[in-house]
Length: 282
Image (tube, rainbow, N blue to C red; front, side, top):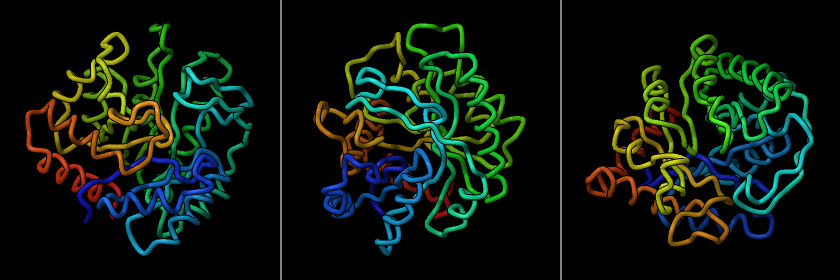
């Protein structure tokens, strides 16, 4: 097993079209394994194709991101990187199930609820497709990779709470909330139903407790429920902030977790790899 693991990155995205192999090579050379995550069918298929190029250390996760249910522009403030136009896709369970049966696919996602724009019709559509992807995960017997995001200004809706309620009613599998930015209470609800919490680059930034009190959440999250992800190419951790993110930088997130918990970095790194092994069956 590796020293580090990035359970959520996007080297399958066009940002890495010219040097994706080099990026993956740097990760593997840094004793870091990685999961490329699809956001729609095309990028999910690409994640599987990339995984098959490597004997070990590179896996795929396949699913439909909630923002890809409708065509819309997502600016730099929203995505933490270059803005882009999302393409609308209708979820086809059979197509995704075919991909899910591939042995290199370790989870279903990223799927979940995104309340950044708080459009009521969109939210209802998101919930419907999220349940369909949970059913896919149940059938494929693979865990869920959750994308959950609240509106930065309107606190009257809580995507974490709504996701938790849907999971309780529908999920027969476990999973992980990636790029966690909820409260201690949100974290505890997920842990109580057997889900994991993954932290990303923003935990290394200057604290903004009004957005997420990462210090309190990390301290309260049991070590045996913690995972790490870069969400590359977005939100690179310090000292790479402002640059294109990549999986080899996940070690900086591990360092920060160790610092906050007052534990040796090696202890935290080993626990995270064991957690990933347990959840994803790698």
